[in-house]
Each structure stands twice: as C-alpha cells, then as structure tokens.
Length: 303
Ligand code: CP
Image (cartoon, rainbow, N blue to C red):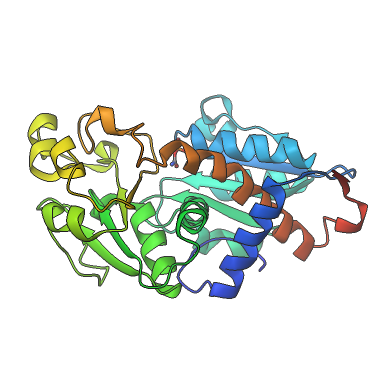
C-alpha cells in the first residue's frame, strides 16, 4: 500500500492489516526514535480527523507540520499542488490532506514522492473515517459477514457513506441506505429502505450529518427532519437489543438524531473517535514502512 486514498479497491486483507495493527497499537505504546515530519494540510474545517492525526503523530513520535489555510500562501493564490510540493521539498515524509474537491487525488499523486492520506475529499471519500468505523463494528460484533448496516441521512453529499459502502460490501456486510427525498445518490448502487424499516432490521445504524455546507438551498426544517427521517427516541426503542448507533460527527443534535440518543447505551459515537487515533496510527505506520521511512526494528515497546 503506497497511499491511502479510497476504499473502492481495498482488499479485505489490507483492511484487516489496518484493523489488526490498530488493535495492537491500542494495547501498547510505541515510539519512532528517528525524526519524521508529517504535514496536515486541511483546506476544509475539521476537529476529529485533524486532532486524531495530531495525537496519533505525537504518539508515534512523528513531528507534525501544521498548516492554517487562512495564514498560508493559499490566500495569495497558491494551489493545493504547489502547497503539497512545497511541504515535500522542505522535508515532509507524509501528507495528510483534506480538500473540498471530490477528485483532488487524481492530479496530485503522480507527481509526489511521498505517501498521501486522504483525510476527506469533497463528497468523494473519507477512507480513514471508514477504517475507524470498521474497527468499532468489529470490536462489537467480531465479524462483518451478513451484518445489516443501514447508512442513514444525506447520502448524496456524504464521503463517509461512499467509503463505508465500498468497504463493508468487500467485507461481506449487507449495506442499505435510507435517505430523505433529494438526499439519494444515484451513483451508488445500494438498496434504499425507509428509516422505519431500518430501525427494525439493522445491526448497525450509521447516521450521517446533513451537509449544509454542500447544499445550495436549505431543503428541510430541522425539527420536521428529525420527525420524518431522523432517529427519534420512539424509533430507537424499536431497534434490536444488540443494535448500535454510529455517527462520524459532528452531530447536528436534534436533527438527524434526538440529542438524548447521542450518548445513549447504544451509541458508539465517542468510541469511534477514540478508535480514530489508533486506526490513523496504523495507517501511518503501514505507509511509512512501505516507503522506507519507518523502521519497526527501532521501535521501543513499553510493556
Ligand atoms: N468525522 C469527521 O471527519 O469529523 P471532522 O470533520 O471534525 O474531522
């Protein structure tokens, strides 16, 4: 694995390599003694992904080169490509990139000589979010085979839906979508069911935020959206005993989910965030090793 850009062609072997490495890391502390610089280039806002990478880099002993778009030369018109080439030139050995374009990876990867991690590409993909979702599911169920996963919400504008739908299918789960009219994505070939069907048949309900920033007009009033299409307490009461709730966050409390359910017994939303640190550590180690920038033999393992 030379980059981590999409789950579309990711094999189950590669996925389990990441998940197993993440679990290994969760259970021990590791350090990289050699100096490695990683640049986190976030052209869109982020709390979880950016900070998970930051914590993961600290835990691995990787030096983080920060980037603030509003004080960078992007304000003078510099492109993503030239920004990335600049960080490469000054010694970065890994780039973590979030950008609003769906397909930014296409023009960038052929011209860079370092590993790149997709931390969010417009409405395209969010593969590291997917890995932490998969780890959370696997910790709960120990398998993916024949699990019913319903991805609920603004499918059309969601990079999380796309990455998860690809990888969960690869792993043998049954993937369904539930979306309000106008939020369907006809580029993804998965069956649609209603939220009321979803709550009764799902093992995992993966809720999505309404991506207001990608809409041209507001399509739904928040309160009526929850009642018509969201996870209310009444709907939650009809879920199977073992069923869990995931959400990549940030959560629009009271819109796609009743605010009291965000931290309910079924919710794994904050567990997902914790797992985000370990999955991102795993992905960075795997890529840096592949490129010869990480020597596991030099790792100090604390018992
Ligand atoms: N889930 C997620 O990507 O959150 P952030 O936008 O805060 O990184």
